[in-house]
Amino acid sequence: MAASADVQQAEREESSRKRERQQQDESSDQEAEFELDDEPMQTDRAASAASAQQITPEKARAAEAARAKEAAEVAKANETVFSPELLRTYYARLFPHELLTSWMAYDPTGAGGTGSSSTSLFARREWSFTIEPSPGDEIYIRYQSFVQPSDLTAAIAKRNPHKIDIGAVFTHPPKDHNTLQSSGKFATEQRELVFDIDLTDYDGVRSCGCSGAKICQRCWKMMSMAVKVMERGLREDFGFQHVAWFYSGRRGVHAWVCDESARTLSNEARSAVAAYFEVSMGTDQNKGMNLSHPLHPMLGRAYDVLEPMFVDDILPSTGHSLLAKREQWEGLLASLPPAAEPVAAALAKKWSGNNDDSTPAEKWAELKRYLNIFIGKSTTDGNGGGQKQMKHAKNLSTKDRIKIEQWPVETVFRFTYPRLDINVSKMQNHLLKSPFCIHPKTGRVCVPIEVSKVDQFDPFTVPTLPQLMRELDEYEQQNGGSSDGEEADGDDGSRKSKVEYDWQKTSLRGPFEHFQKQFLAPMWNELRRDRRAEAEEKAAMSGDF
Image 1 (cartoon, rainbow, N blue to C red):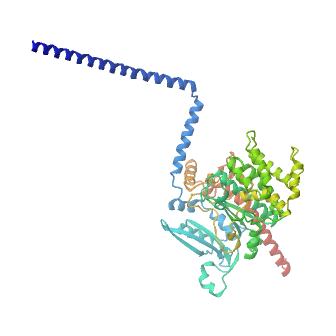
Image 2 (image 1 turned 90 degrees about the horizontal axis):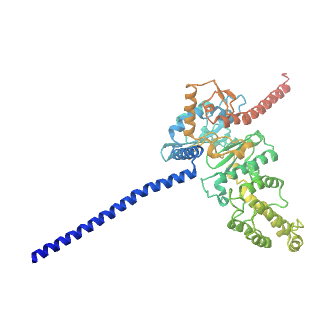
Image 3 (image 1 turned 30 degrees about the horizontal axis):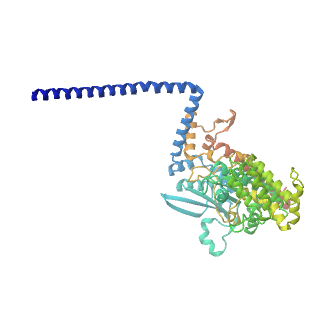
């Protein structure tokens, strides 16, 4: 009986275990069915969402274009922009040797001083090379000179310099300076009046996130402002006619003033010209600029040029947000002279109100209007508040009134006025980077800047070495290899002049030809007239008509 009971107990336990396993299997099947059923539900939802969005062919193409652009940007970021091999090809095929040497020789024949003697301007010009025999090992070679342009071309091809600097014209060929310096016979004779403006000097007022060598479209506007002010001053105040502007290849601009009257200026005269344009931006302890009162006419003209650009490119959020964010405009109001504190308080209260929706440009105009009322230059603010403000004007000292009156000018200048590296301009023997060379950090060409279109100049579209090599290859593939003497198509479909140089096969053609036609040609015409007049004068004096 006991055995039978045990058997029955075992059968009952086995039967119980079977039921548990069956229940577990059924539960698993149900979960599997749920998971399988959920997939088509998700697919249906995705299809429904896609249908709702209705991805049109135009959107698909736009998405594809965006992906292609992103891929191109990634590839460009990883591209080698500078190498000795690329540089050597540039010097051999694209560097405009003829343009540079004829300019530096001041040779109106355009031959660049071919056949010149050791007494010519070109032969007495200093050239400096920075070479790198091995990575990180830079050698700086000064006081080089060349009798003929072909000698310079050969030296560049041999040395493959990472940087070329141009110096003064000396009394004797600079290569002989060691034997002449002790005798006192070696001295500078002439040199272009040059200016160097670098965005690094604007770091204290760049609120775009850039500093040092980093630049962007927003802070580059400051270079456009500097060019406009300097260009007008050099031409209108000093009468210079032959002024060339160049992109430095990275973060600045250079000006070359090439009139004979500029080239022969003494060091003292150069210092005086540079000081004429210089405006002290103050120090950390003293923010004032100490501008003259009344304002010098040159500075008044500069303010008229710069203020509209200040409003468009410095004040808004698309610029440096000077009046676009509360933190910024509070700082600007705090910079008002202490005597104008009531104006700062009134505008801070107004601009922080919930109903204020004024734009940065409107805030600037309102700030200037309040200041004019405060010092008594205007009798009404348009809201009947003029008489109250006039009481403050009566209590102001002359010194305070002048400080308040000049504050808008100082503010505009602090953000926009040219910041010159004045030491570059002071001395005849100061070197400056050669135009047309390559900046080793960016691989970009130091191209001429067309002043009339300076606002459209974009440093990020200046051609790089890899880009130029691709353009050369593409041109020659399309034109069957060699194309000397053939005509080229312009961007507008017109026929351009015949191709004589390889740089005419690339995007360098536009800036280089503009430099040739708009800068060199007028200067050559003037030199020819001067030489012809000089020859006629000599003939008249000798009776040889």
